[in-house]
Amino acid sequence: MQFQKLYFNNKDGKRLAARLDLPLDEKPTAFALFAHCFTCTKNLNAVVNINRALALHGIAVLRFDFTGIGESEGDFAETNFSTNVADLVSAAQFLAQAYEPPRLLIGHSLGGAAVIQAAHKIDSVEAVSTIAAPAELGGLLSFMDSASLEKVENVGETLIDIEGKIFKIKRQFLDSLRQENMNEAIRNLRRPLLIFHSPVDRVVSIEQAAKIFTAARHPKSFISLDKADHLLSRREDSLYTGQVLAAWASKYLDLS
Image (cartoon, rainbow, N blue to C red; front, side, top):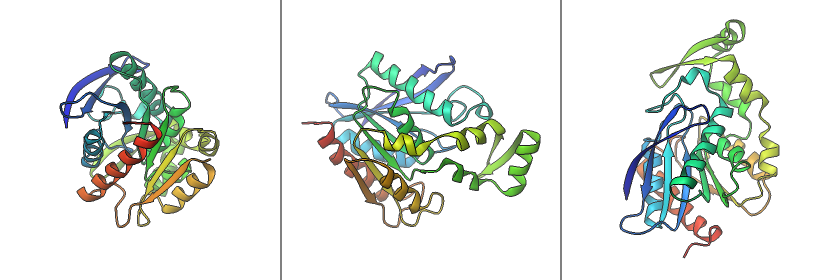
């Protein structure tokens, strides 16, 4: 796999950092977009491994840092779920102008919920895949303790510690999670959907995957990532995910 270091602007003019992972010595048969998990970055090992597997099957994948994350410009505290969806739309527009429109959307955790929403705004998308994604965004508030939730409700913002990194969360971020209607977006997706989830995921429970699967219409598929953790920390889990995803996509994207 080879990659290109790229930048593009979101709808607010913020410069977002990206990598385009490409097949080695061949023209891509399709282009895809990858949405990383909450507070992760485009450089998470699992993302790189999944894209490596896709590249072996001729699929080029654009991975980028959401606004305020990683190498991208912007203030994370001013972002929310809606801005993540908007960033995906901007990324799709960039791909369409510079290369080809994305035909596949892939999202990890909260990024999985975001690609379901973004698919309704990107006409070129022909298939969607989620990895450890939630069906109910309000449930993600469990990453905050009661004291932090109370503070953000009363004061309007609070600081949270996620794996040693400090992030400022504002009330508008929580409000965006509570207001988003995921069930309707899943039911009306009208694209083939592949759901990956681990039965031992301690961050987003397997019940969330069941709710996505139940709400979705056919064609839909579910793959159990046995023994994998939420971040797909083991290399074999992320490579397996990429290999299965590539085989599935080759059917629904009609790749030679």
